[in-house]
Amino acid sequence: MADIRRSRYSIEVSPDKCGSIVNNTYPMREFEKDWQRRFERFARSYKDDHLISGWSERGLRRRVALFNEILKKQRIPAKARVLDLGCGGGTYVRLLHSHGHKVVGLDYSFPSLYRARDADPERTADYVVGEAYDLPFHDKSFDLVVSIGVLQALGDPERALDEVARVLRPRGVIIVEFLNALELVAMIKSASEKLRGWSPRVRTYSPFRVNSWLAQRGLRSVQRAGVYLPPRRFSLLGWVFNRKEVVRMMEEIPGLSMAVAHAFLLVGVRKAG
Image 1 (cartoon, rainbow, N blue to C red):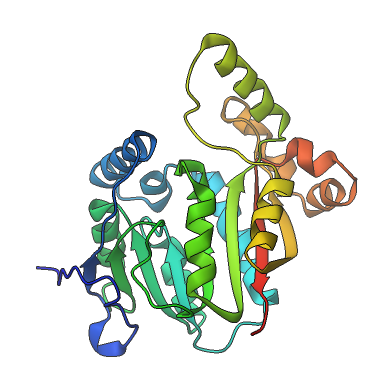
Image 2 (image 1 turned 120 degrees about the vertical axis):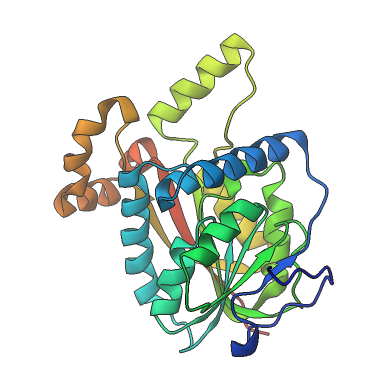
């Protein structure tokens, strides 16, 4: 059995506790409960990381490659303390550990965390059940917080960012991913949902809005990178976005990345002091 505890500030990264699962839960809205049930169903039904997370295989592969490029450019201490907020099946937990960091993977889905732990037979990380709105860690606990595929499933992302800022150390880094509200496909889909009176299935945000949220919390944006993916019905066009010169062009032409990027990874650094 997993070690399950319920103390709010009980989590410390140390070798003797790696592989434990700790439970910290917080009341959620119906929108978030729907997403939690969805992720739990994914984890019970599938074993592949991309299916557990609800991505396409290409989508996860593209995000991981981009994340790895971004991570190498950041000034993060060796053996940094890292929180993977919304870790799912543990893809980024294992990647971060491979870089020598001490990692905690937090998620609100028990089945996802069991998948993550099973994929980590050496128990190199801690796995914590908890909510983004009430992180079970002391202030200034982490050098890096990673949040991939989380904001889209939150009703109050600013509240989650408050918690991220709280647990980040001075000069700590956040790498946060969000679905792009300015993508043409997303805008068409949003307009269609409004005309039909449907509630949005996911939350999307403009890069300017997320950048503003970070700034309000003392986090200076230092990098933004687009995740370029074709619509699923046109998946055969994926080869276009595999070409580095195509991606470079979209990043360099003003406005083009905003209209084409499916999502963005944004890097923020907490101010010193």
